[in-house]
Length: 102
Image 1 (tube, rainbow, N blue to C red):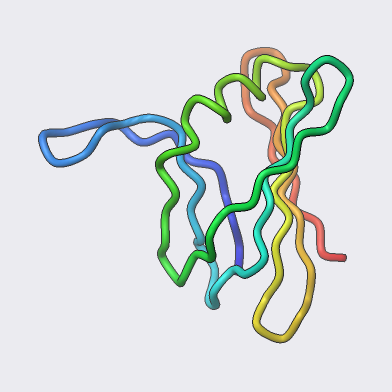
Image 2 (image 1 turned 180 degrees about the vertical axis):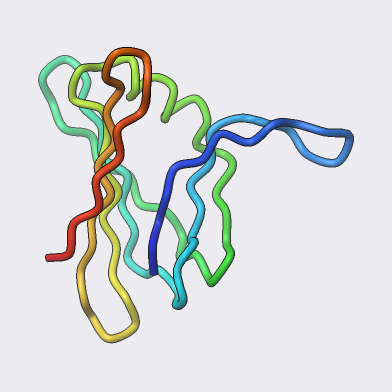
């Protein structure tokens, strides 16, 4: 799996906004979305994403997290149990994304 942040434009068939997409070659399991509010780390589970899967209902959470200096993290696992993390922050008006393999 390879979970990435994407900004998608809306059209007549779909609403636009921030999405989390699995752009990898396997499903992403045990996914959590973490951001920081008032000095606390908030962790929310996300259902598994198959190959090509998208989670579009996180737009508001992502927008709020990007307004914070800490940004957000998405942690997930492959079917074989390997752990990964996508970390995103906003720097100078641009998203900076880093991928980590645990």
